[in-house]
Amino acid sequence: MTSQSVAGWKGSDDPRALVLEAKGTLSLRPCPVDETLGPNDVRIANHTVGICGSDVHYYTHGAIGQFVVNEPMILGHEASGVVVECGKDVRNLAVGDRVCMEPGIPNAASKAAQLGLYNLDPEVRFWATPPVHGVLRSHVVHPAAYTFKLPDQVSFAAGAIVEPLAVGVYAVAKARAIAGNVAVVLGAGPIGMVTVLAAKAAGCSKIYVTDIDDSKLDVAAQLGPVEPINILNDSLKDAVMRGTEGWGADVVYECSGVASAAAGAIDVLRPGGTIVFVGIPLEPIPYDISKAQIKEARIEHVFRYAHIFPNCVNMLASGAIDVSPLITKTFSFEQSVEAFELASNAPTGQIKMQISFEAR
Ligand code: ZN
Image 1: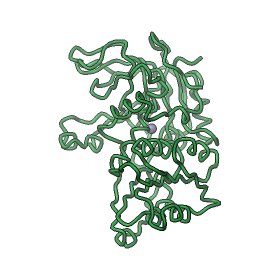
Image 2 (image 1 turned 60 degrees about the vertical axis):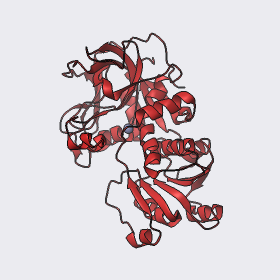
Image 3 (image 1 turned 90 degrees about the horizontal axis):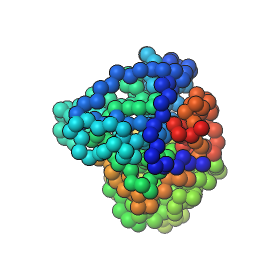
Image 4 (image 1 turned 30 degrees about the horizontal axis):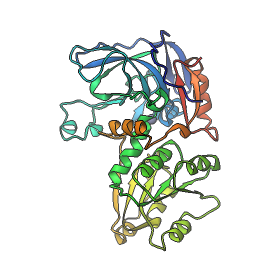
């Protein structure tokens, strides 16, 4: 089901890209991108690209918040591939290396980058966020500093999931989770799932996972010490309080972006616990400060990730994290439009769908 890493894969010579022409219109057509290989860049032949909720949202809505698709844009930002050319000053990579790529490039001279908060640089250029092209095309030029070598045992499919996985691992780092913690993950979409994997890898003893889709909860239940809760039938609060002698969870990861779920996070948190807001709500949501004060809750927010891709690659290599249950369907590049049409219908049972340039 997953596309395997195949030694010697040289890249696609398909001249086309998957272009979002405007809201609701996709085409597979040549779309030249003006890219020159700088001394610190590598040229990569893309192998696998994951379909993200944000790609689908640009397709169906033409915008996410302040980012509006005003001109044709190539989609895709979750990618792995093979280095085919190195700039003259590149030291960390060589031609033939299998790699995954961090899709946001900050301005290195920005205040945010100087402070190490490069993901918060207002000037960051992030693939498939207007007006920056994404990577559903045969090749891309990228800074070597944001390109990470994949060990042999990490497949291209797993490499292309490092991008969403990084969000989960970063959320767990923000929580300062310790081994033995009890966690709650609200929402079993792809980001909820990778947060479960990251929380488990950090030693969580129990993870309550909520959703309204049993097929997603069934997948979540396979990932670790998970108690799945369909909130249409069962009370999360009752389950957590029963399981913690009325004390509450140490960490709550809000991954749904849904107002009612976010509002309930504080009700299942223990005194002195931590809530991490990971999911991005499409509208402002209410937040009860006094409830949070009574528990002296620590609140963290995450925006994408920073400094975390190497940790993710290392955990895939060691087996500490296994993403294979999340990769539910692989399409060929030729099937890209079809893949997005399917993804836009939010099919049950699908977690992460990917497009492989090698698949036929
Ligand atoms: Zn993504």
